[in-house]
Length: 151
Image (tube, rainbow, N blue to C red; front, top):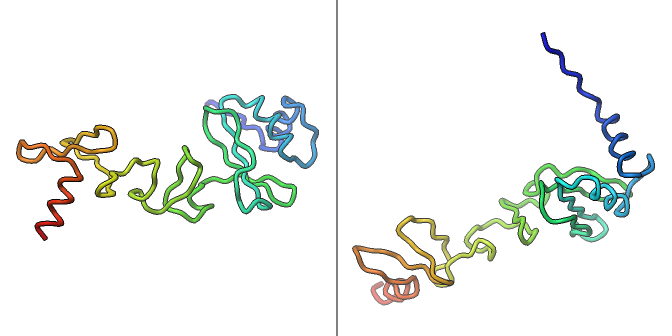
């Protein structure tokens, strides 16, 4: 039988603080920067209550994101940004929460019909989507104009 020994969180936290050169006390942004220097495989993001839940520290690019909430001189882990922001989606590119995929700029919605095109028969050229319909190619602008004229 193989037995695994799992260290308690307190012991792991103390080891991390020692490795980062941080004293065993309350931590702030300066201490987060020291932790970021040690945890290179992660990117630490800190949001603050005092800044209306805004981002006050953005760690080194790359790695797995860790979101922390700084309030009352204490840091708490944010397990799901969507739940924290009360939004359906969270964009790691612009660091904002949103509810509608079609309205979020980073998703690159079509500038003409404001939809996300994921059909394999559609090709994006610049900001326009070329749609293949019955062997004919027409862009979203033309398709939307035709739809308005016909209806």
